[in-house]
Length: 87
Length: 187
Image 1: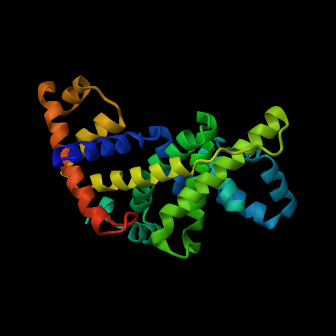
Image 2: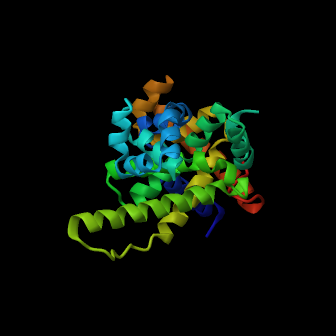
Image 3: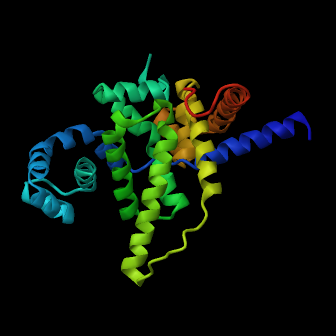
């Protein structure tokens, strides 16, 4: 195989690898980037769950309901943040 | 030094210090990788992939203080994404068809390809900005010459040659990197 053929192959391979990583949906990325502030909103709920074992069990059984009850939108980022904090 | 040029270890260290911009960059750096593992390797539905995506970054954030090796953030995120994706597939199988012991397809080859793809993507960071942009738009975002031409205010007739030149530059960077540095943290 000559040098030119090798270069073409390498560039094709690089192109394939670039194509393998399309961007994640922008809304998902933004939500994950805003995690620190979303996480801070949950302080009160988490403190109560840490102090009250029964409440903690209730929260873990239905994270979305617990978020709603505490006045938060139960979007995937907040649900994940709450689960991670109580793990 | 821009955040995009920081090593993984340095970026993790900045995140641990509470640097919000560093966290933004960390999510940006690994978002495509996590997304690709959930959707390409495991074929999760978008709704499940989104849950896992958020779960991975939420756990990563909580886990920053406990990482034993900051350089290992990339394999750590990769393993976590893989484990959570498998759990989600198993939970779905239990709910939908009552199967407790779902056979998970072997995805090692796909994961290895995505690892390599992430390393190539990291190599983009050292190219001139116009090259990063045109390669990302054409290959990663699958934009047409026309769309790229309009967005970057360049004649669409020159786009193919620009892509070719930038790809050749990327190959040079990639070859230099492959001969020397480790792929995971050499940004």
